[in-house]
Structure formats: C-alpha cells, structure tokens
Image (cartoon, rainbow, N blue to C red):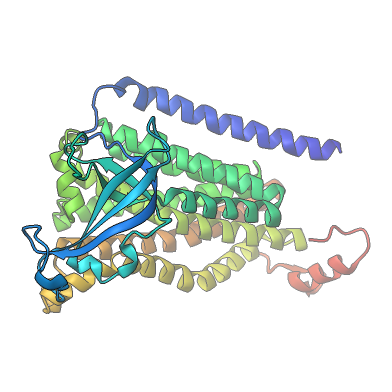
Length: 429
C-alpha cells in the first residue's frame, strides 16, 4: 500500500511540475501580448437540427434555377441550392424554428451525402439581412456540427486507454492533454503574438519530451537516457533545417493558407521560414520519441535480465535493436508526409506532368525536406540512445566502457540471464 501511494504521489508531483512549467511559459510569452491583437472575423454560429427540406434546385452562376428542373452536368458552373426548416438548439433563440439555405458548389455535389437531410445536426449563421421578411431566407448553412462525434471518438479513445493501460493509461492521457496545452496554449498564441518561433518551438518540443517520459515512465535513468538521446536527434534536425532553408532559399509560402496567414494582422509579423523550422521539429518529434524510448527500454530490460552485462555489450545490443527499428520508422515518416500531401501532389502532377519541374516546386521540396530531415534525425537518435543508455545504466559500476565480451563464467550474458529468470527469488520481468 505504501509503495502504491508513493507512486501516486510521484505522478502528482510530476504533473504539478509540468503544469507549473506551462504556467511559467504562459506568463512569459503569452500573457504580455494578450489583447494586443484580435481576430479579423468573429464567426458567430448557432447549433441547429434540420426539420425538413422544402426545396432542392440546381441553379446557374447567377442563382437562377435551371429550366425544367434540369440538373447541372459534371464540370458545369453553378450550385445546388437547398432550402429547409431547422430548429435552433443553442443561443438565446433555442427552440425557434427558422428557414435556412445551403449552397453546394457543383464539384462538391458529387458527394451527395454533403446535402442536409431531416435530422442533420448543423451550424447556422445569420444571413446578410437576418430580419428580412416576405419569406426571405434569414439563416445560412455554414457547416455540419461535427464536434460531438469527434468528442465521442475521443472519449472512446480515453476509455480504451484507461481500460487497457489502467494507471499507465491515465498517465498517457494526462501527458497527451499537457501536450495539447503546450501547443494550443503556448506555441500557437506565442507565434501569433510575434514571439521568437525558434525558441518557442524548441521549448515546446523539449518540454513534451521530458514531460511525457517522466510522467509515463517515472523519473529514472531510462527517462534520462530517452530524453537526452531524443533531444540530440531533435537539435540535429533543427540545425539541418536551418542550413537547408538557407541553401534552398525557401520562402515558406507553400500554400494558400500561408499566403492568407501573411495577409492577416497576426501573419504580417510571422517569420515564415521560422514557421517551417517549427513544423519540421514538431512533425518529426513523435518518431524521435518512439525510437529513443524503444532503445532505452530494450537496454534496460537487457540489463535487468543480466545485471553483469558490460557497457560495450549493452551498447552493441542497442545498435542491433536500432538497425531493426530503423527501416520501419523511416518508412513511417516518409509515408506520413506523403499521405498528408497526397491531394496536393496529385493536383500538381495533373497540371504539370514534367517530374523534374515538379520536384523543384517549393511545396514539394518542403515535403521531401521534412521527410528527409526527420529521417536523418531519427538515424542520429538511434546511436545516441545506444551510447547514452549504455553509459547511464552501467555508470554505477565504474567500468569505463567495458572491453569484456559480456560473458559470465564461460556463459554468454543471454544464457546466464535465462538461468536467472528460471531460478527462485529472481525478479521476473
């Protein structure tokens, strides 16, 4: 019982320290700029439920219905217009039935499920003239109310974590919430307020590394080994990113979103190249944390099986595990970036078929760069984890590197470890 209460106290202490660090960062980078800027557009929406669809027409670019109820042909300019009644379910007018309109561009209309139907839960916004009379539409459809479904799926995920992982699942859930807080309460507001993106993104990444490992695995040598090796890979990725940004002369304006962001009040003071640096670091962080913990945990287990294993033998085992992990994790990074930009790549290839030209477009170059830098950082993390973990795990024995072969009384370390596990009184893994 005492040990269990001690573990809970440790978890509470780590969580309290993580929250305190977040609060300090918020006071330093976010609070001074609060109220300095405001959003360009304040979108006010009201939740509603569709009662009945009263009109479903195809209209031309002028908004006039097509003659004889004809539908738009594929590729023809125009929209599909639906008028419907809906009951408001939020705001001061909740319970009131209103008339609303949904306009669907012809290229979207091929996805027929996008049209509203009775029972659909949607978001409405007042039209230009909400007080218009004479049967005019007072509300317009802006989107489906997807948040309850996303929240439901998130709840299923949280319950699965708790049921399967129990206490470890709870720690994982807390670390995930703290990571979200670091990104959405510190990183994004600080960037929008013109703070140093390089410094903020590096802080958030290192904070995520140390907080996650400490909370999930405790404050111990394995956490130290994983944190240090992951930080080595992260800093290496950042340095390579800085060098390649200068060599390739990247502007950071690789999408419509980047251009629109730069036109906003917030975006004019954002260094787009620094934003690219942050995107590369954050995008590769998950894979780096995975491999760092894989190596550190594997070597910890090996030492538990055979406490007399030498530092050299432990390091060699770390290199062997790293080579096995290397292929799948590198593929994971490459495929993740390809998958996230698949639509953009298809569009570019359909417009410009020449491969050489395509591979020099900045948006494509940045995707390739992100995958390569993340993979190089991963490859540097693997040996760093093997060296750091083997040194930390054997430091108390003072074996300065251990040139021995890892043999114990004529037996190799693995055979000796098997015998120990089969003997009474030896702690089983």
